[in-house]
Figure (spheres, rainbow, N blue to C red):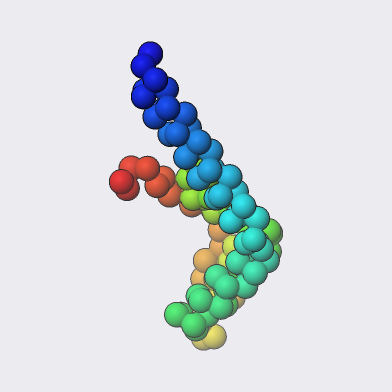
Length: 101
């Protein structure tokens, strides 16, 4: 193996490690409780209905962006019979970043 190929391979592995540690570090600053409040406020502003997430929300940024939560409910209109328009036991959202490139 040539010296240039070895240096390129080491630089590529170092770059991947830096990106991995950087995303882990960035994810440590995101508070799941604050994320839940932000989601609820955004839904309230957009629809006028209350979004309740009773379990903790988990967020992962590497190797793909994923969000998972349990016990989610969206309130119904005041004139409706049922108090909740939507009830979800568990939801997992996963966005794979590499295919986007």
